[in-house]
Image (cartoon, rainbow, N blue to C red):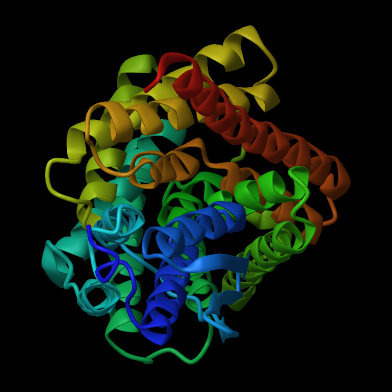
Amino acid sequence: MSADDKDPDTAVLLEFLLHLGKAYLNCGEQTAVVESYLRRVATARGLRRPRVVAFPTALFIAADDAATVKTTLSEVPPQRLRLDQIAAIYTLGEEAQRAEVSPQDGLQRLEDIARMPPRFGTIGGILGHALLTVGLATVLLPSAANLAAAAVLGLVVGGVKALRRDGPVLAAPLSVVAAGLVSTLVFVAVRNGLPLDPAYALIPPLVTFLPGAMLAFGLVEAATGDMMSGASRLINGAVQLVLLAFGLTAGALLVGYRPENLLDGYRVVDVSPWLASAGVALFGLGVFVHYSAPPRSLPWLLLALFVAFGGQRLSAGLLAPELSGFVGMLAATLLGNVIQDRFRGPPAMVTFLPSFWLLVPGALSLLSVKHLISDTAGFDGLVTVAFTFTSIALGTLVGESAYRWVRRRTGW
């Protein structure tokens, strides 16, 4: 590659770096990793002494240009991305780090990625949400009534998400609306004599709103010294949980129930391995359809889910249940990186991100928030949640560190 090819207009390059950084942050990537990726892109294009500072909601980039220093700063508006969009962003980022795409072409590809339609259409996305809801319900409590409720509520929440995506139909936060609607429908069904356990019927339809990955990455960033980004993610995740709990409580109150009724039916359920495996498969298929995962990624997605879930189940039997998240995420993180680097599969974020939802770290903290609202065992529940999330975050951190160590030792 000639020097002319590596010296594009600095302003265009900075604009590309800014938009690429925003895309990475909306994928949920750690800020330190985003900074590293953008510096590699800038260096590959011949930019001198690039400096990048990333936060979950803001991005700052500066670089020398002859006798001047050019800088750019922008906020990062939150945007929900599907798995196919996440995969396309990471593919573009890898090409940019090798200087295989010009800044102008990169900007155009980012615009095209933002406009990508769902691979399975609106109806497919709604059905996919119902399928992943039924899959998670099978893992948690596979009773006939619970599975039927999961299918109906999954369709309802999938439809609400589709309406919000097509336009600003709902003024209130989507999570509050969805949680309130689910809670109202569940308690109306309970009032009419249907054998539902609210503690298990409420969680599966709302699992995609649970900020498990956000809270886990926030803990990772805080543990590695990035206090501002870590605190920002942790506070944002905690607010999302409170909004969900508010919606659930409001729905129960609308039909004459009390906040403590949100926990009705909560108990330890021993699901057979065969049923749990079927639930994991349904969950993975639902995630694949609802989030428009990239073509040919389903086998890798299912493999990562089974490894994470198997690691969690095995370690829960051998160790304390609170430590099972560490083993599950350690396995998912290692496998996701191996799939990406050694087998040219989808990006690691695509394969192990759904593992956060399957391990349901957010569901554990949501139950604790409901405990807190009902004035029963709130402190103990929050302590358990903090320990659980710490183990999951450490699993992610140790998995990434171990993989980098193996790469250095083996030359992968």
